[in-house]
Length: 414
Ligand SMILES: *Cc1c(COP(=O)(O)O)cnc(C)c1O
Image: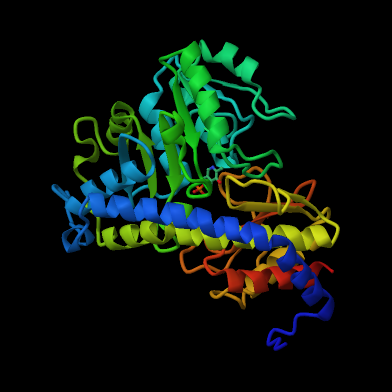
């Protein structure tokens, strides 16, 4: 067999074994992508997307049909009445911040039901960072969290706390933890029971990394708001920046007021030639997620065969594109990230080093040899330098290329 990257024999054998193990799962992933691609196509057809929507505006951006129609297409695909999709969300954290500040008011309580939220959200809530920086806590918004237990979300504890909460906050993906990701069905069950207990409670989902990993999205199963980043799954590797908020019309409007100004909301905001890439990215997204899921499943099988503990296992159901591998020591972790970086299409010649990244509480090392800076729908991995020295691997726009990088990482830690 030709082997231009000179992957060592032992790793090649593991690769073949992993390929055999994952064949059936790959077929299921193909089926998933087919269903999601057709849902996306249907929304494009229903909303008669044409050349006009691919153009864009400058200045105030009044009447930008590309922007307004993308909101509608997005809403349909995400099973929500409304959506706000903007390149001017600088990241997922920004979109989540806008959503939290959009709907919470002084005296309200935010209830996280999936334990400690993603690192960057801690400072937004006011759990870390300096007093007086404009966090939710500064504005008198209370916070409570309910840790997850072995069986997942602690529903009885959630229902009792939800009586006093304005927002029940669900983080679908694991972030930098080793808990299970929540499926759409689990999110639906939580939403239904919370709404039964407290009909006014807003169920908000951090949907980062979850988009298109199942055949429906959180709003379709009862969540009130769902939020994510366009340099992850739904940007398809094409959107250059941006984020989205989808959900109940009144709530999305409040978020739009917070993003721009009360009264203006989503009716202004020019699109600066981003419409075309946002539409194309959305169209390609189910395919990008397919490649990313295959990469994650393959990596899981390879590192399990090497004796490492992996989350999730290759055969486990998935609701996000993340694969973690417990490497157990910092040298292996750095070698792993270096190998991924060196096998990337962009910046393969650079060496990643751990650094104090803004918003994160310990040093982080990241490999991201990406066309879009920091885009984690492209093959990338990151890890905080702390026990248990686990690495989080995600993305892969092209499975064949990601596979090679995974094999190189396996070689590096052998
Ligand atoms: C990526 C991510 C975010 C937002 O991170 P950004 O880097 O700001 O886009 C929030 N929550 C989770 C679970 C994430 O994976």
